[in-house]
Length: 70
Image 1 (cartoon, helix red, strand yellow):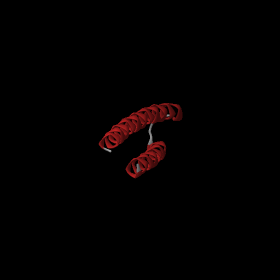
Image 2 (cartoon, rainbow, N blue to C red):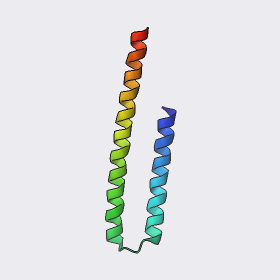
Image 3 (spheres, rainbow, N blue to C red):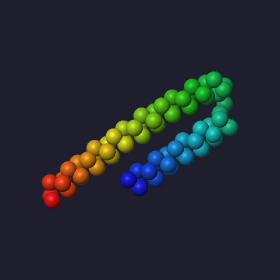
Image 4 (cartoon, rainbow, N blue to C red):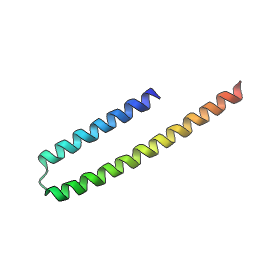
């Protein structure tokens, strides 16, 4: 669980850093840039959610295996 928390923290920090840098150096208009950032954030949220679901399923399988072993 610690690894997942560290991963998610790093991912969030990376997204915020990337968004800030994109705003500072972007040649697009503010509206276009906000749209791109919104789309990227939605994509990342989807990927994080999927990764969390996969990890939960993995942990549930491990727990079930441990319960059967005892």
